[in-house]
Image (cartoon, rainbow, N blue to C red):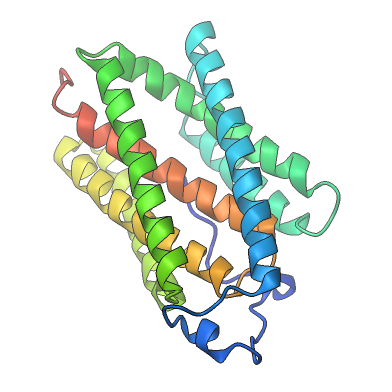
Length: 241
């Protein structure tokens, strides 16, 4: 489980007022998406597609090469460090390498998880089911926001606080060997990740996120967490634990 970047963006990525289109700013259905928001949306989805493919390729290589899991400490340091680097470099030429570094590292951490799932009875079907459910959820939520233009940014603080609680609970379930708590945390993270997809997409549509690099990372991390949580939930029945 990977910690999400905070919904409170740096000053350089602060929401700008949309005085000329008040309906869009309020998220009214039928409001037109502004030209800058459309540009951010196109760039975000293009970069998101590339990072997802790159991350999947790294994860597949990890499974094929049987790479070892990096461990909790390395995972947390790598995730937080690379997230920090993306935020620091968001407006420089090094932003894209930082994004691919982050998504590649997260793909590397996913490889051992997929290998462990494949070792379970019906593991391949579990991965396919989790992947299909993640894709369907992302497409449905994105289509809803794009069609309704509703503004879900008010949920950001609540969802971020919930994710912090989920991370702490997940660490407790890991250290104290509590599978039931771990399963509950996976369900909680799946719901929170779906909500964060709504928030991030609505911020893009309504002009609240002018930086496509940060928008891409926000959506990628939510999709990653949603997939790993569903993988844990769907694979629970096939576990020998």
